[in-house]
Amino acid sequence: MKKYIISSALVALSSTAAMAGGLDRSGQPIGLLFEKGNYGEFSFGRAMPSLTGQDSATTQPIGNVADDFSLAAAGVKYQLNEQLSFALIVDEPFGADIQYPGNPAASGLGGTTAIAQSNAITALGRYQFGNGFSIHGGLRSQTISGDITLSGLAYGPLNGYSVNLQEDRAYGYVIGAAYEIPDIAMRVALTYNSEIKHELNSVERLRGAVVNPGSVTEVRTPESYVLDFQTGVAADTLVFGSIRYANWSKTVISPRVFNARTRGQSLTNIDDTIDVTIGVGRKFTEKFSASVSLGYLTKQDDDLVSPLSPSNGAVSIGLGASYQLEKVTISGGVRYTKLGDARPATANTARATFTGNDAVSVGVKVGYRF
Image 1 (cartoon, one colour):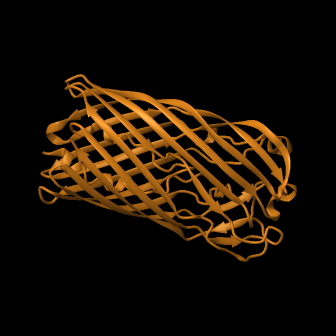
Image 2 (cartoon, helix red, strand yellow):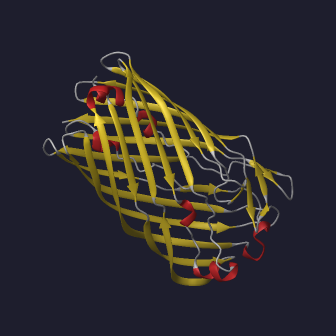
Image 3 (cartoon, helix red, strand yellow):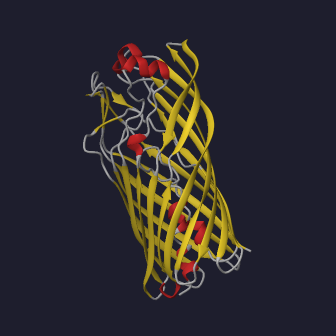
């Protein structure tokens, strides 16, 4: 079984800009490292979420608070010899684009915003022992930055608070192991992504006046464990899936003035997340493959959530297809995500209700073997 032809249908699903848990965007994939021979790729995805709700105090509708966003990623892998390979991956692992419409003086959350950006460069090596087992690992360089505004009557004396978290670069690591049986396209890989501690210079304001001209805010992006698997189940048919656990509960954003006025609370309040995907891929011809997958994101126990992340769990379905040329593989995919109902809250009190929301994401990937 030519597993690389069948597996190429799966990349369309990973290239879609999925609505993942917490502030996850890319899922930090490393599948590039398992491609055959020398290989390079570029992917682009676009997500179009719809997150609307109702203000609990005024009962007025809240328009879409989630902006559309794009993701781009690229990578290259070199097979140095039969046992040793190297890969370089560039992606956007985390992000947020939340903006509540409405008048801050007449609504619970009107004017609240959360904008976050990140970029990562990951250098990975892989060593194959020759008996099906391999180990992989490397270093990750990551930047994050953000702007958060708390606005609306729900925030009481903090209505009009904002913080600018200036870009910071920090470093982490990746380590993992895999087992493969190439004859049946079977592979199981377990990967650990370390947390990364950032120290961001921060400027805080309250209703436009600077209340903290500069201090350092420590923010840790979460550690995660990822189990990827695939296996052939019949001629030209592949079952695949992944389980990703991210330790978001340790991510705290509490700038100096906000920390003092809230007695140590965090601007974020995100539970740990588990993302599960399972699907099947099929090679229909020597050049054309397609796949379908289902996804599930666990819910937190309480539907009271941070206004900066106003959904609770999700389920999704994705379709992907790829076409193989001599050296080039072109893949595309689309995913529909049903977002879980939630009640954005401050001070442990629901300020809005968000129900019946969803997202559509599309993506394309071009791979080249050399």
